[in-house]
Length: 238
Image (tube, rainbow, N blue to C red; front, side, top):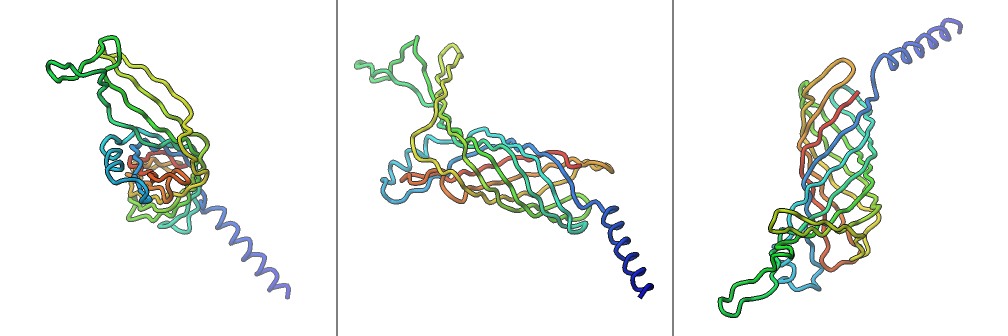
């Protein structure tokens, strides 16, 4: 019995020592500058011509997200991660010409030199993001990352930008109350990247990254928008 007990204690001690020596957890932070776009979905109650009109004037918006994360390694080739951070996305309209009248003699648009010549609207969604993902390593540096994010909407704003002929512009931001925004959403995420700089205590990574909103940003809009974000994610892991 004494020998069995001694062997068991030594076995447990050995396992604990091995686990302590192996680095199972990594911590890090990443930055995701990207372009986002609201992909329009129609529930059928809005004429297709109206939908096409919005598609013609809306375009990609510069956006940014950032989070901190922890990764747990199953082995040298696979790990899972959990993060927490801030996400900004949305869409914007193209610059639209402002017409103040039509010259009856020429049929050409007239402008007011003291008034803005163009304008656009920028729609911003401010969210808390909780990403969960699986990562698989190929070789020594390349990896595939796939997962989902819980998106908690905290505020929504609408910015009007007026452009003047002299090159100046004027911005005005207000709360966007145009619809009942969804409080909780989810995205599908995928990226393929590279640990391009590795040292014993830290590594730097970069990967093209794609996020797509599973649900529309509105709870009940006839023309809803599923947010698509494309960009380059980069950061540090320690």
